[in-house]
Length: 357
Image 1 (cartoon, rainbow, N blue to C red):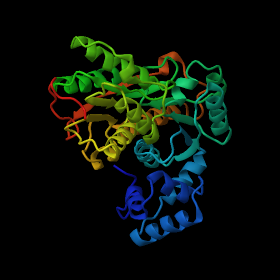
Image 2 (spheres, rainbow, N blue to C red):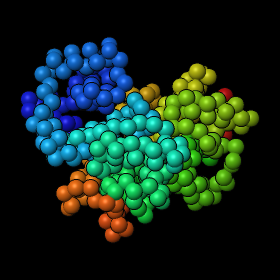
Image 3 (cartoon, one colour):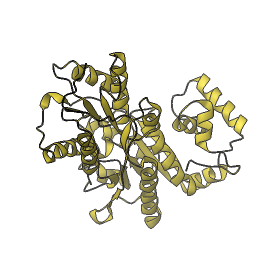
Image 4 (tube, rainbow, N blue to C red):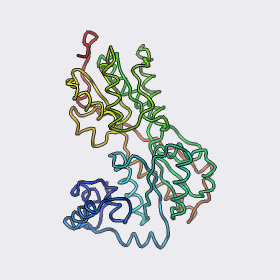
């Protein structure tokens, strides 16, 4: 559920009316972020039209307690991040806590450490992390110096020093790949995403495991590594894969944004989808169901995972009443949520006699 005020209007409803993300609405409400004057005016007009009233009592309570959860994120304006924000807001708003946001690339440990330190200096009592920040901060000497509990969502594996809430990424991708193989595909490409995300390695392992189980060889020319997790990277990967002398009949992507880019490039090249090329995604963001053909995907409950991770942080703060001075190994947990394979129209049956044209 999205954050709801007393008259039943949610922050997500305001975002939809204004044509922006829930994060943008939150930034406007809190005077944060970099929204343009025109965007601020559009959001305020939607708030007025819908009668949305921020929970001022909860805000005052949060300020009186000086209890704030900081969120480290990258990849602004993505459906994935929007779901994270809604889930985190559900948890923090229910307890009258504040949510403080910081964005950056997080491509290096030094950058992630600097961002985490800045959030704590700005008043964060706990940190909620999304990839790649958990991976960058795990094992860092800065964690003990920060002196706050940390929780991460959507990591590829459990981490020794950070609470994690995730799905079985390896198993999920293995199951999705088995479905593609069951449809008759044998020349299957894979678009992996950025190396510094732990989910990338876990999902690639699942893809390769499914190939091995079916007696299919790993073909290096069909695996696109070292890219980003975005639409443009998907387009670039598709151009490379579809230009091969023997192109794939299916392309499995490690995110919905990558898959959207693949679909766009295939359409530009005049390929009929899914008859001539099957494509799958991962996450089941709103984008997955709005593409044509709508994507077959692994669904991970991002909003619920963010809600649960924020709950873990709130519980950690409640045990001590203040900053914890760091988490010990016994305080760190790993929760694995169920994933679902959502079958839509983007996979077509393929026979060995068929070839891309």
